[in-house]
Amino acid sequence: LEQMNAMTTFTSDPNARNYVEHYVNPSGRITRPVLTLHTEGDAQVIPNHEGAYLATVEQQGHGDLLMQQFVPGGAHCTFTSAQDITGIDAMIYWLDTGTRPDPAAFFTLELGFDPDFVPPPWPW
Image (tube, rainbow, N blue to C red):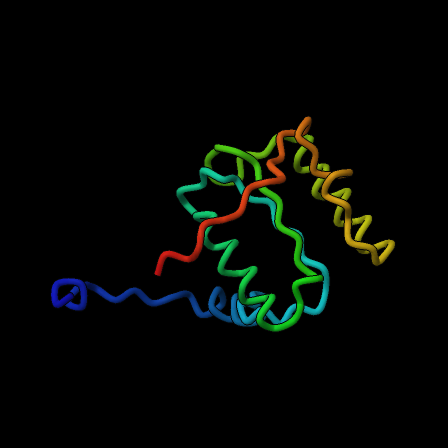
């Protein structure tokens, strides 16, 4: 711990920090539909993040506004074009109709989605 604390501290770009503070909402207090796509094997942004975000959103009572879909394997954001388009189509449907997309209709096994994946719990 002493060695870690003695290391260089990095500062962030003020514009980047302002952007994150304004547009990123890890509080779970979302007010509009949010759809996330994640690869199960992502080592850069581990799927546990999705589980932590879901728990946070549900604690705020907004679980109905969050939909998370997963694709087996893969590195960070390695989706097929069909998977990307499906995510966009599902989001447009949700925004246009106000009805949450049916995962069985949009995020099918044939397109490579994994309907049974549950992200592991947050490790820390």
